[in-house]
Amino acid sequence: MKIEEIKVFVCSPGRNFVTVKVMTDSGIYGIGDATLNGREMAVVTCLEEHIAPCLIGRDAHDIEDIWQYLYKGVYWRKGPINMAAIAAIDMALWDIKGKAANMPVYQLLGGKSRTAVTLYAHASGDTIEDTIDKAQAHIDAGFKAVRLQAAVPGLEVTYGVLGDKKDYFELQGNRPLPPEEPWSTQKYFTMVEDLFKQARARLGNNVHLLHDVHSRLTPIESARLGKLLEPYNLLFLEDASVAENQENYKVIRHHTTTPLAIGETYNTIWECKNLIQDQLIDYIRAAATHAGGITGLRRIADFANIYNVKTAPHGAPDLSPICFAAHMHLNIWAPNFGIQEFVGFGNEQLNEIFPHRYEVKNGTVAILDAPGLGVDFDESAAQKYPYKRSYLPVSRLEDGTVWNW
Ligand code: CS2
Ligand code: MG
Image 1 (tube, helix red, strand yellow):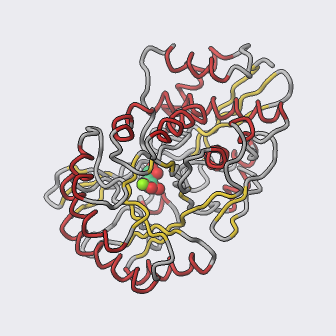
Image 2: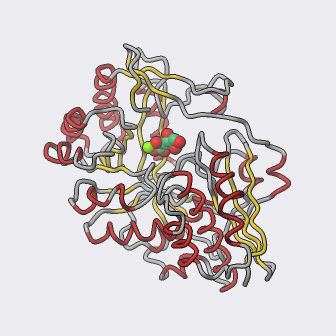
């Protein structure tokens, strides 16, 4: 089955998505997600100009060889742009193989380890009360796990809290330049302890609570936070500190038993090898779109399994439903699957562009038995929402120093 054409699309139903469609001479096509928020067009160029010409005429069944060819063959290994491009091709090839075999992708990975995938929902509020009300609504809808984020009093904007803004562009003030957001660790600490104290008091102990620090703290501050939150029994504390230096996590681990999660920006196993091997984390959050596709994430999951680290794939709204589908197949297969982040199936526009039949019931998603990935891409619907330049925010401390967003 030969690859005949590789099409690349960018659409913007509220935020930008890069989608790849690999066409074969058999009539079967596959789709993949190559979205890299804030650097979308770099991935498009990488795919169109550098990758697509090398793949025309290749056998679409050679997933592993094509992955190695694009990873090792480029000489400049790794990196988010290259790995997002590889990821999209890889997902599309798994989609094709599944359709050709008339089987869902999880069957090709080894079959199911479970019958449904547990999700964690987001509760993000302008106040602690508002956050807890939203968490209660998720619990009432059947969710067993909820991530709590609340705006930090005294800061103009807080990561993870959209407030009354309709979408991502409105949050940026419709300016096609990176918005800047202030940060204060001191103000945050006051809020976060109250948030979990009040949440446990109101929500009880029968629900898993999670929290994303979005890399704002230094290792010793993270250690302090982990200790502070121990009484509230978190499922995990996410991205407490940056781990470009993986040894940083030894400082945190040394002081707290709060479980730690990291990895949504990772592109390969190499960024988390020591974190996993030294058992410095409990959940690895890499995403198929950013870590080399199903092939890349499968390798990370298998390695993590040896060290009792579970998977918790990134499920932010800037990953397309194709990535969500790829995660679902990995989640259904992985013996060490932990939990899937879930922000809803987006707006109507998104569902029109990426038709799928996933259904959430009691905070879980049952896998569908459609062949391949089980999600499609409607080219003409996508055309209605053209690309809009957009950036992620930049963070600054209150004295103006650039900080981690
Ligand atoms: C967040 C993301 O979902 C998460 O855990 O950290 O929403 C993140 O801010 C975005 O994906 C950035 O692109
Ligand atoms: Mg996060």
